[in-house]
Length: 308
Image (cartoon, rainbow, N blue to C red; front, side, top):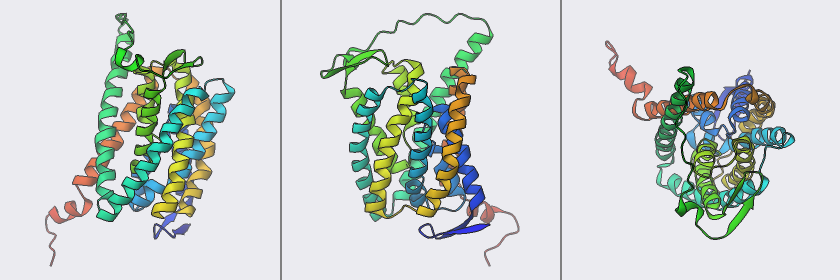
């Protein structure tokens, strides 16, 4: 059951792509992330060129995130004001990122930058999240009471102008940090094909100090707008979006995200963060191995194999 992808110029098993879309959609709804950080490496492993994988998965990220937001919105767990400001920054970042992506393609360095970005960002974020969540889990199992931390808001972050009240998140802060965070997420969306949720969720929790109950839904809402704009710009400027590939991933993503959002309430926060941190770290390491250790190198080093 092979299908030919015209832009990627490869043939793939289409039921496998639908199931892949469903699996990543489930992860998206469960953790409040776009899922792009997981999708791109798998597509590349299946033989899809990195530039096409990054651009084509954007529609899947939008679809699965939309499905998740519908679910979280019904639970009253989305701060649309906060998400809107982040999305405005995401739109600006997407424009900058797509132009940067186009420039890197012209230089022939796009694939290298994509792989390095995954290795550096995912490796660092994964380690931090895994350390924090495992520390909390071990402390709870040992029955040790966590020392009460003084949640002092940093002056450089909360002393900025243009303050906005976010009742749903329980905040009254400047619009500049969420806007800047959105710009950063938009650039990542264009370069890595991700919604930026794996960075947004920790920052929204630990830096912006948003209420934990609205972080996931708000992150997904921002991802919809940022990644949607990125997909349109990538299709128009770089012609790297494979519609057939995007459609197959989208079908599974919508269903998977609904299931993920439903099951998210069955897990504790630190358990979800531990699994997410492990996933992020694994994908980052895998991209690094693919970058520095090619399968062809392994075959060349195999005993008894000659190039004659």
